[in-house]
Structures are given as structure tokens and as C-alpha cells.
Amino acid sequence: MNRQTILNLDGKPFDRMETAEFMRDLLNRESARFQTGNRYQVDETVDENNVARYVVVRADNAQQPLLTSDDVDNKLGASTVYHPALRVYLFSLPWFLASTAMYLFAKQLWVFVLTAMGVTRLPAWIDASLLIDATAWIGLLWLAWLVIGVLLSYHGTTLTVDERGITYRRGILVRDVTHVRFHEIRRVGLRQGLLDRLLNTGILEFASSGTDDVDIRFIGIANPARVRAAIEDKIEVKA
Image: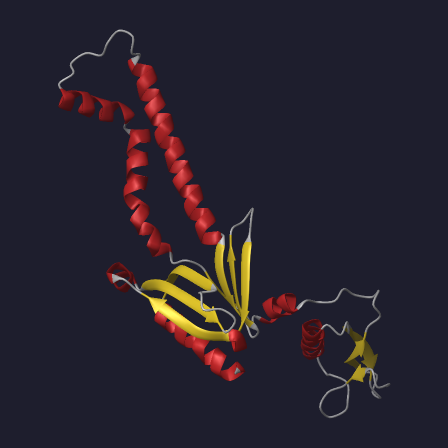
């Protein structure tokens, strides 16, 4: 065994492949963080009883790709990803109902509107069936636009908290990414209106030492007080 070989704490090879892989991932993560370019892999060996054992060794550059810290954190489950709370989209419910009514009940809606206006017969130049069909299509397109908007907003807005800091991502086709390390965060703000308190949602704001403005503003996060406390705990640990 040369000095490039990483052994267990007792100076012997690892008994389990999973333990050796865990050590390999930790080493690759630190290598990626400090940009030293080191790469590690797990090799199988045998002990004096011809039983399989495992060691972690410095790998050749061509043997395996370097894991980024994001890859390793995701694999180890070290990061937490927050999306906007689904209940904040309840404010769009009236528009969902209106578009659905236009699509399903276009004829009944026109009968109601014309009756309320006192119109008993449409002019000859207006095609009633075309008017109803157009209304239904408008309702369907409006409903599809609302659904797509909610899906894009939910899946395209994330706040990722890992051991390095927080990362705010917004957008799918065009992405806006902001990353702030824990030691750079100087203020974690929380804003809640009356409806936010009722729904237990709110706005989290993060300001770093390099600016007086808010670097990250996450709107509609669920359980904001608990999330804020968890992040502040991480800030104190990393300080």
C-alpha cells in the first residue's frame, strides 16, 4: 500500500463496499471544493484469508470523471430543496373556475349574459354556434395557460440549502441562479401578511455582507419561520 491509498481507521482495508464508496465520495467532494483536481476510486483487494476487502485510491484522470460537490451532496442527501407552497396558488382558484366555466358551459354562459342584457335574438350576421365554440376555445386556452404557469412557477423556483450555503434558482428555459455562502449571510428576513399567517407561508429574504440590498427573495415558502430557524442554525455552525 502506498501513500495514495486511503485505509480504514484501523489501518486496514474497508470491510464493506458501501463504506469505501462513502469515503470516496467525501474525498471527491473536498477535492471539487478546493479545486485541487484529485480524483478517487474504490479498488477491491483481498486480505490474508482471501476475503474481499476494499480500499480508496487516487485515480487516474482518465479512469473516472471528477464528481462535483453538487453531485456528491445530492447523492448523500446533504441538501434540502424548497419549492413555493402549493397553497399559495389558491389565490388563482377564481381564474381556474372562470376558465373552466367558459370551456364547459359556453352556451349556458351566453344564454345568461344575453338574457341579463334583455337580448332575445342575435343579429343575423352573428353565428351563434361559432360564438359558443370560440368562447369554449378561449376558456380552454386560458385554463391551459394557468396550469402551465403554475407548473412552471412551482418547478422552476427552488431554494436549495446544503452545507455550503443557499442557492436560489428561478426559471426553466432561462434560469436565474444566485448562490450565497453561509459566512456571507448577514441578515435573514421574514415577511408575512395576514393571509400568509393564515396559510403559514411567507417571504424569506437573504442579504449578504457585500451589499445593502436583498440578494435572494423567496416568495411563498411554506413554514417560513421553521425554515428560517434551520438556516440560521447552519449559519451559526458555519460562522
